[in-house]
Image (cartoon, rainbow, N blue to C red; front, side, top):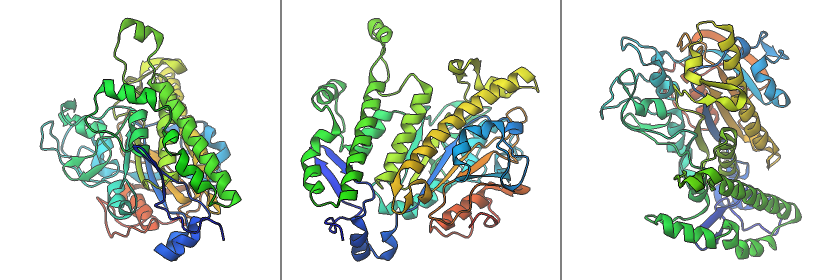
Length: 451
């Protein structure tokens, strides 16, 4: 038995203004048996939901064959090293994202209904209404066991008011997580704020000047937990000592990247421009930083549920850095123009390269007898199929992770077109130990997912 038999999943490294959670250590297993029951001696399951806007180029997303061993389509090639860790699910539909008598507004409905399966009330006033999202159904139950019930991340700022899409509130097109029918949860898009929320106690009401002084004196969050870390290290076995060192190194590496992202460029500084603290100008780095924060939050068990919106629905972001200067939304209305098709494919491929980075981080993180990815269920997809058609059937949906060995991966699983997307979420919740008979417009659990 390891020297660290007193450890539990709630053990933290503490210091002034800091509470740093620990990763899964072998020495926690005996304590988990004694304190929380045998089920707690295995790593917990995590649920993640990642969203991309404006649909995808479906011709280069959809595999040509069913089952395992299918040739990877062009868009999925960045995931070649992970092909045994994910499956493509086709035929899934979010029927409540259709107009159903409400007229235009497909982008707003696409994001809002993606995890809820409920028709959004068409309004740009304060009387917004949708439904409880799958992540929040999970957070209500398994979120009680962690410091944060759920984590809402994104690369675009959220909005709770205004008219963003044909009479729909901006709250619909910028929020994926809904705690109740009338309460969307605003996502965090600033890596520094997420880092401080996860790893420091924070100081509410602190002025920018006071915060700058504090940041100059606090070179690293690790400076404040070093004493506690040294005391812990002597209680650990050799394998756990190495794992602790790797973890603290990963925290420091991420902290340095967050700090680098916080520094204004020389031109902005000379011009006296006010640059948002902590948000990188490099979009790819922004996505990867937020992904790394999600991975670290799962690794330290400060949360087991996360949503990550790569860009708000209807986003017209330019991708000039990959030679696509036009806006994403404008290009999605391609009208079958071959040139626009090629540019959309470049944008989609870029997004999937970032997904590959995040999945590889999860897979390279050892946990128990497997990896962090083995103990995850991660959905990546969009509430629109083809951006030009604005359709909400046969959506692009990828499911990664193994749910603790319960999921069979490496396949293309084809369902009848029109199968409710919420059937997938109902199944995922069930595999995570959250049992419900119905969610949104679900009609039952999906067959063919489990090992």
